[in-house]
Image 1 (cartoon, rainbow, N blue to C red):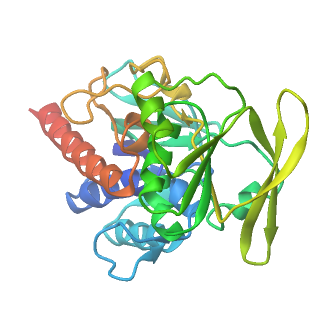
Image 2: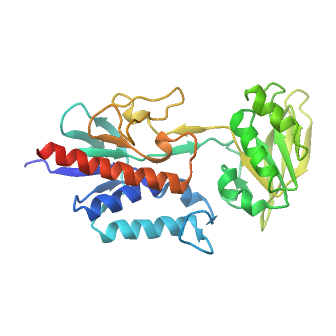
Image 3: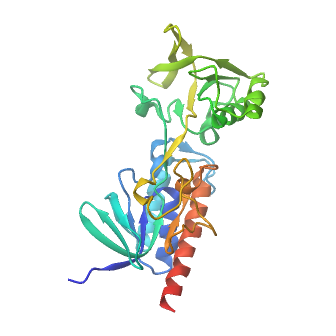
Length: 310
């Protein structure tokens, strides 16, 4: 039996993958998405999204992904709920494997995203979007004039705390050591902010909640072991992300953190392989920027396929 060769295979969904699918499907390229374990990406774990254009009153994250999925399918996208576990992009025809099946494609778009690091505390998953967040830019608006905490000690934590200080009544920055990885200028800026207080050396060991969501955390002093309760309206993790790029590492360049390096608007070092969304964007990490990159990757893939035919 002759192996079918897809025009475009998109690995991962979320705003980047689904936008790419919409564009490629409308170009009659019949894209196939391998959605993996978390179809829709990080937005499926959020509640209301108010900063995605087109929704005056906001939209729930899972609902937004449902709408984008339906839009992609309406134009002919095939979505397969399997995980790509192996790839070989060395040839003109790209090879991928999912659940033992070998898949062939002329072009591949990687949109596997990045997974936010958390403390893996009990009830953490259930409280995501109900007081616990991994993105201040996304969710800070919901905590106006409220008391929140940020966990982390790097530049991202300082940026998140500074951003939240413009919205919240009080921001408490929690770090397990009294030495910070943050750059001196970022640390100084946070230290001089009157709305930000530091709690070091502490780590959160338990999340406190009621029927409405998070109400506080239990802190433990990492030197003395003493514990105390801290009342909060919101808790933000800023301890980094893990890019889901491992399976592709032999065929793409990555930075020291594992984010895929792209040139010329989503191109990787392997011709015919493109990357879009959080997997190649360690800076913005927003749904709308991911969608924009998905559009770019789709158009780049289309141009690549046209050049193949010449």
